[in-house]
Image (cartoon, rainbow, N blue to C red; front, top):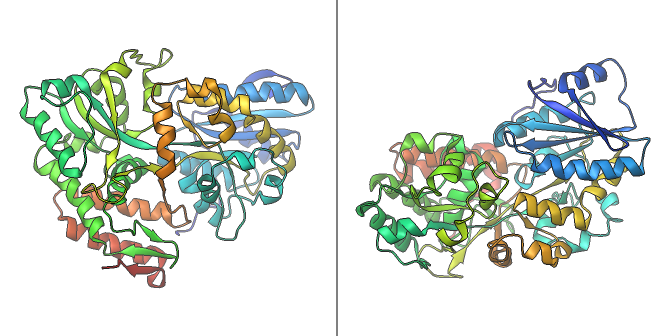
Length: 465
């Protein structure tokens, strides 16, 4: 991995909410750096850093509720909320900058499972195995989610909270205009393309099909887009051979997945290149394109209906009647017939946390069963916890929650190894190359060369014939 900066920059225009005995006070983030720089950190203060999407308040409200209760029980302690208002990739960078110094490090961080082991490898996170041993809900967590926060050293580096699955969302009004069925379940990639062609050839002005692709889309492109194709190719390899502990190169399925993307552009079945490279296209999709029947099919995650709730920026109460859900099929319908990828977020303790025991006590408050039920409902995510999944309020919070929760049984997980973020970037570059005219074969060869450079030739192998 490339060297990480050792001196943190202070991101601008952010603030902290502080809770002392249940009282919230907003203070500038710059004050945090100033106070810390002038002396040792306050051992009675717990800082928690998390990603905030624009003006969204879901995570803040989840943490606030737990912080108020925790402060009332522990009046000698203070909880500081450190919201990082940033896009996905920028959040990871800014979070790492905060964690890189004892002066600015949070005591708890909200970590995506795909970046967690990379942050561990860079020395930002400390093992939590001894703390986990006394955590009452560890056995409630899905085994695959536990694996995602366990390093190759066997140590646990986080407590999983959320997960997600992916499927095809389709707009029934667009389908009706194209003469497509109201209840649709494609059996192969070709059947997806046929539906997109029908939309293109109809009187509808809707974009037929959208999947996230290219470097501006970050991990959305790799996971929602490319890997949902790759893991359905039947190669049986995916990205990484866990038994051999080597990254896979030269897979025909990799080329075929890029070929599917190339077909979308060659046949005018997707959005323009400029739209694909717009890092804010997701907001337009959720608030305008799907609700206004300007998009036919979207390959995306379980959480997106949170954009249509009564409290969202663009309420769309009719969506359960207008939007259908279909499993993503494998390339030719063989194997299991369908495919989904699962990911998720959790909480970790940075290496430079002031008091790991106190930080973990607050973490336990954040992940109590009733707290996580309410957080899942507000955030529209899938839980990793059996105790939460059995709650009637959770099971009834969304028309789609049971569908997406059931998909977890057959979900694939990314190889969340320290090298994965760089491998993911190479995937995005390969997608973007194909989108701009490079052949799938050439883009795949460039990916192979990049991955070999990232992990070393001793950590790669050619795909099985």
